[in-house]
Length: 121
Image (cartoon, rainbow, N blue to C red; front, side, top):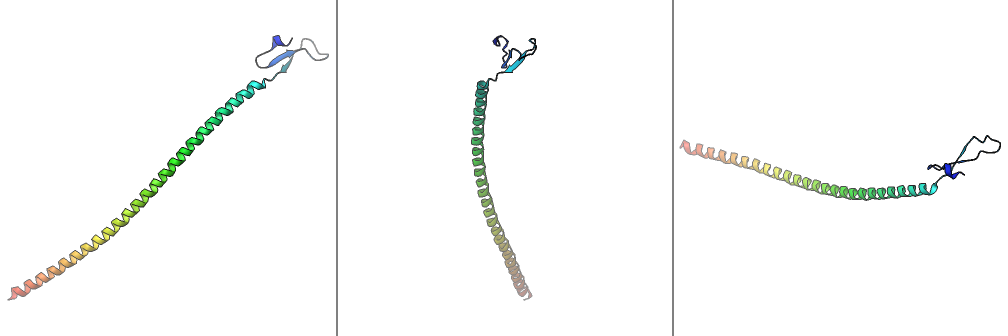
């Protein structure tokens, strides 16, 4: 008797309880757990797949960042080494220039001295 009034949401009607008016309709909820459980299982499976994809992408990006960090460390070491060489070169060439200026001044002084000695005679 309940079947003709059955709804798609799991609700059905049944006769009223003891001593109640026969015009009253009582509703009884008949849960359909199997479909809900299967739906939840499918959702959990999809979420697990998404989580695994996120995990693999995170691992890939972490590896990429580690490689990038190592590349930057190597580049920084190379720049530091080249700066050290450049500073040494500047210091050496700078002192060489000073040496050239001093030698030129001495040579000029000697030439002026000799010129003044020979021009008096």
